[in-house]
Length: 76
Image (cartoon, rainbow, N blue to C red; front, side, top):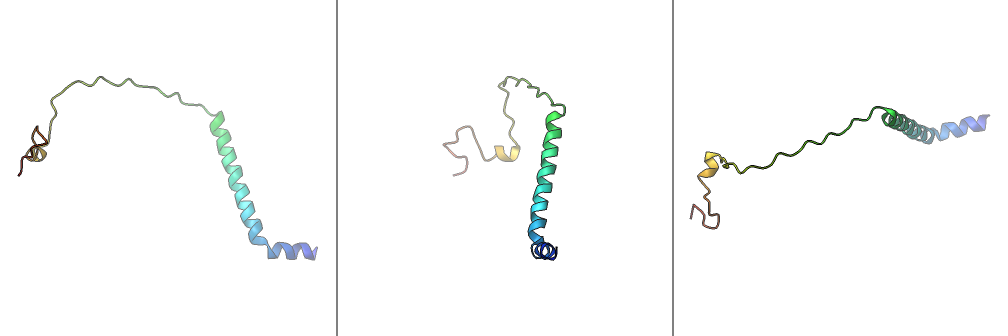
């Protein structure tokens, strides 16, 4: 009996690490099990509205430095 107690005292850190891993695995398994049996939400797909050509509104600070022809810069 003393040899078993000495073995546990000398290697307690390994038993602690292994027991923590097993506890986390058990918790993960239980969480996964409860999520699988729970109510699943149906994903609804909303249709995308057609893109209508509207006039693009540009902030005035950006509008001052750009024009319609990007190859010919406004500031030279």
